[in-house]
Image 1 (cartoon, rainbow, N blue to C red):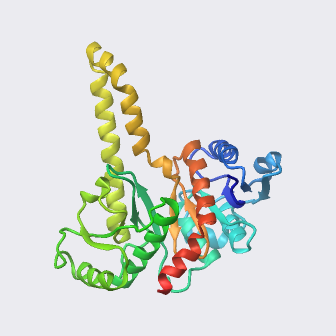
Image 2: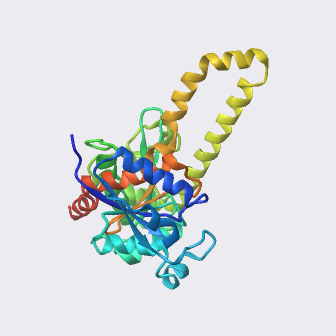
Length: 328
């Protein structure tokens, strides 16, 4: 079945190994999706030679480095690949923007360039956590260290829309990250948020504890950006440590190496199922457009999947779904 056309602007210079890894990822995304068009944004020497019927080069003369102050760089480098990419969405030339460049610069450029959906106090960064029972959308993971209860309610609506459209979950179950499951647990903010979510958030199932994040116990977990970012970094570090320990154990002796040959197909299947690259990137939810932010160390698979998420969000009407959820 043919897919409708989706146009994604891609930052050619975003990421630690750009532009090479980005160009490979773009090629993979185009090969996988016949309905995809890409506006490749970057220096003329990089993007112009790649022009084709489904890839349009857009020249940007400046680059925002990872170590630059995000807001200052966005204001002063108006012809940077990140700012130009967000501008293409605002102007309607692109449906979505993807970059594996500076997270802060992407947030600033998208918020300033695309604006916010009506009613959104602050956009939030979401990420998909692979879990034992299925993936979970976790937000916020870094955009808002200090929040109010009504902002967390907005995050719940935004995360629910993302889970429906990107993960295909018809009626997402939503939890509030807390130190206990009881309604009276946690800070005053947590207790106030709990009461608001009971009244205003369809699918809210109550508080969930930290162990629920990797378990996939619910479909969406809401928290502030400080707690969410710490949670995400702990999970990333723990995952890397455990995989390293398994690899060391399986190569420690000749007998273990023989056993590794037998179990390697199962281990590869587990690794693929838990690989965050499968979900492409972290969406900035709440801006009046689609912005997907990839990890700086993203490889071609993560780049291609990030672009694919932008196309899927476009076809699913993510921005309108968030606006509709908030208007209720």
